[in-house]
Length: 183
Image (cartoon, rainbow, N blue to C red; front, side, top):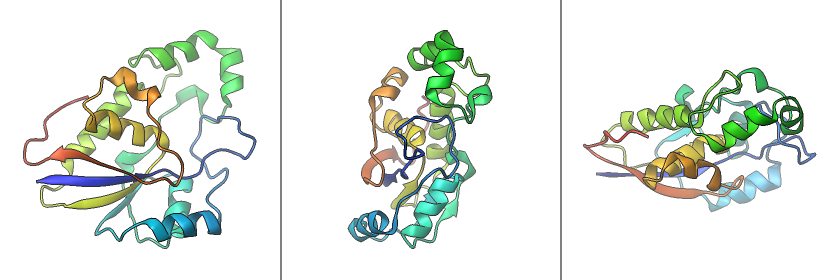
């Protein structure tokens, strides 16, 4: 049986357009943005959400009952947590470059891209075989990891995939009962 997942990313950032290594609630969908996204979504039997404040706020704004799923947490940014991309680039340009180009690099002491993809693959493989469809509200990095898995893409493709905020993307990443592929 094929499980269809619809990915939905929250609005991220602090309104300045500057990337921050964080998943705190810097900004979130406004009522009109969430209302428009919610009106376009079909009803799902199951809604999973990541533990970030942005994902919780998105689920509330869409008036969705959701199940908190710790495995869907965003990156562990290690020492870079809470810093802007500009700060990290100035303090550790080689580390940032390595992290963005080598899926096994974790210069910040946190999680590598491959590590995130493996975590998400384990979660996908744990979904019940009788599940037909679900909505997943998660950070963009988690959505990228789902796409890497669903497309059987190499992990190096991670940074080339995008799920825009509040734009549903449906994939069928799992075929039951054989879900043993690893990232």
